[in-house]
Amino acid sequence: MRRGFFQSTTFRLALALLLVQVAALALGLTVIHRFTAATILSDARTAAEVARDDFAEEYRQEGEAGLARAIRDRLAVRDDRNFVVLLKGPDGAAIAGNLKQWPATVGDGERWRRISLFREGGLAAEEMGIVTTRLEDGRVLLTGEVLEAQAQLARASQAAFLYALAAGVLLAAIVAWVAAWILARRVDAFARAASAIAAGKLDARVERDETGDAFDRLGTSINAMLERIEALVSELRMVTDSMAHDLRSPVSRMKATLEQALGRTREPEATAALATAIDEADGLHRLLDTALEISRAEAGIGRDQFTRFALAPLLEDLAEVYGPLAEDEGFAITVAAPGIDVLAHREMLLRALSNLIDNALKYAVGGSTIRLVAAQSGSEVALSVSDDGPGIPDEQMGEVARRFVRLDPARGGSGAGLGLSLVETIAHMHGGKMMIGRADPHGMTVTLRLPIASD
Image 1 (cartoon, rainbow, N blue to C red):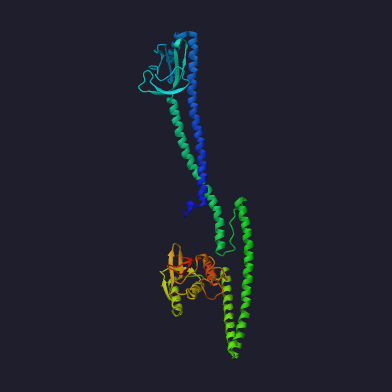
Image 2 (cartoon, helix red, strand yellow; image 1 turned 90 degrees about the horizontal axis):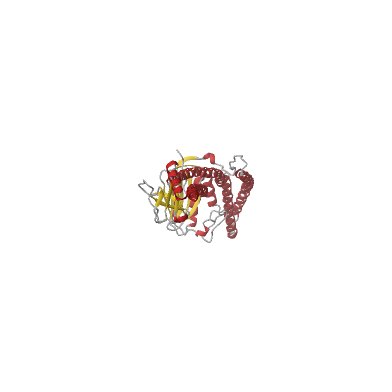
């Protein structure tokens, strides 16, 4: 299960769906259970009241002797083992019935009451529902129903309630999981397309299932938007690439003309002006070259030249090449790289790391060490270049990689502001990403996270 799944919207939606289904099921089963229990007790009460009315009518017609005979006949003939009856005289003595004695806590006008009493021949008290009524001449009649059968039915109903609830929870969990899976699968199609677009694959599109539902319509709209974006970006890249390519020749001719003029002049002021102009032409030429590299890397040119190679020799070669220059600037370059292989464009990766080392030499004023580190992190390699210079403020971390952005107030020096943009583009070209952060204890770290070459 993916990390953070329990904090995801998909999980919360599935949980909400599960809870709603379980709550609805529990409410429905509770209502059924309570209604069943109430119906059982209502039937017992009705039976007790009907018996009371029948016996009261018998007493009015036949008197005490007729009532006692009717009670004995019902107890003897009718197969009603749950029936309870007792007739007591004015002196409180039992006249007829199947209870051992009149309950001391039962009054003469109970409408309906549940109580535990002993029947004749019984070894234990039984729960029953009773009603009582006062007859003429001080006599009192008690009728009722033993609730054991009703209790058994209620227990069976409760057991059925629990089993149904458990089965319902399981079914609701399955339904919620299926709904979440369907939703996640549909959303993943959008996420995959967005990730591909972020990686520079502007031809990526949202996968559709042609169902015509809301997700499918949304996918159609997003694909139309992506097609428009791809067309606009392609046109912009073509214009930028053409402009940068077309400007290189005039800049080269201008530089050649300036160099010829510099060779012919002997005036100090003119010589200095021409040298400055040549430096600016060189800077413009480098700017155009970098813009072309970014455009080509964004277009994916060079992906067919990916090879598998070890990082350690690459970093050691860079340290050896830049060692003398770093020493002149007061820096020492250190390398820490275990045996890790990557599948990458070697020259483009060299260009990215060279840019980062150049930036460190140029901007890490007051520092003394530049560290080249490669470390494995899961299925990725973290390739970082760190310095121990002054670094940049936290609020400018998000600005430093933007094109043509120069943070001169924080880090002095010259440049067009395309170095880190090129590094980030090369990282995206390799299916990775660039991250900028603070070094420990101070300074700046730029990390490229790239996929490790699979076996």
